[in-house]
Image 1 (spheres, rainbow, N blue to C red):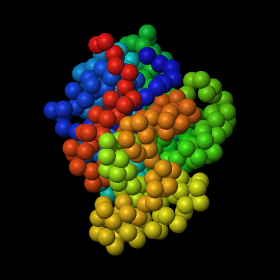
Image 2 (image 1 turned 60 degrees about the horizontal axis):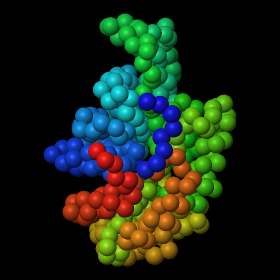
Image 3 (image 1 turned 180 degrees about the vertical axis):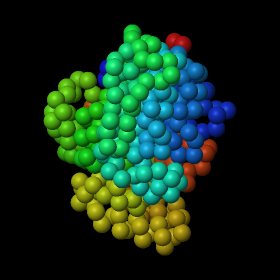
Amino acid sequence: MSGRLGGYGVAIGGPYAFLPELARQAEGHGFDAVWVSETSQESIVQATVCLTATERIQVGTNITLAFPRSPTITAMQAWDLDELSGGRFIVGLGSQVKRIIEERFSSAFDQPAKRMAEYVQAMRTVWRIEQGEDVTFDGDLYRVLRPGLGGPGRAADRTMPRAYVAAVGPRMTAAAATHADGILGHPFTSLRYLTDGVLPRIDEALATAGRSRDDFTVAQGLILCIAEDREVARREAATQIAFYGTTPNYLPVFAAHGDEHLMDTFREVFVASGKDPEAMAAAVDDDVIDRYAVAGTPDEVRDRVAEFSAHLDHLILGGAWYRVPPQRMAENLWAILETFGRPTDG
């Protein structure tokens, strides 16, 4: 399966005892894709569980950490899952941040945009060898100079798996637009940041690479909190915004609205309160919640989500997670499925 991914996706996760049923529920509610992350659980294992539990829905990783892995290993995993699922797998690659890659994963983080560009090229070289081409890749950071033990050309009739790249800044966006099948936008965003900054940057990068927009998927995350008690939803969204707002990577999102000062505010509260979620939520005004998240009752969120969706190929719906109790995370996921699903007949 190939081409541009559309519609709605939903972010899922949690204990493996429940993950297969969550994937089936998303499929039964008519979602176009489910997406698994790589924080406390490994992404490829989660994706495998979701793919074997479902029949039609697309399954993607948002994200699989690229730099701690050999691109050849990641390519082999994607190739195998693509075969296992009949083309339903999307490997979404991300760089993470320097501190985590170096201090948790003992891996290199230098030149992240160049490293990601070479990573995707190396993966594609592995896939092209599997299709029977006599090719190699000899980059500055990665190399694929020989086929596997089975030799090249074992699956000449296979299409390549899809690889998306998570990007925030212009260099990583250019790497995605030049080499990947799609881009994964971080859920900490705003409609203005997307329409005035991200989307024009993607179009420019695609044009520079000589690629058609029709062959590229823009998939974007969104902080979406839903509850019958709207204040519960808005408090969760506020805490998540304050948490993201302590990270310098996301300063351009604030800058799109002239909100750069919020980063200092949120950092001060984060430290002074000892990371207290109530204090963090109290530091976020209502208009700030509405700029950087969608939060409220089911009826309140529908039109706001549609505003985002109108500008994107694929919208990934996921809730807040910072200091949110597991029960509320489950309730929010179910509300997303019920509010935005298109139930199927099985």
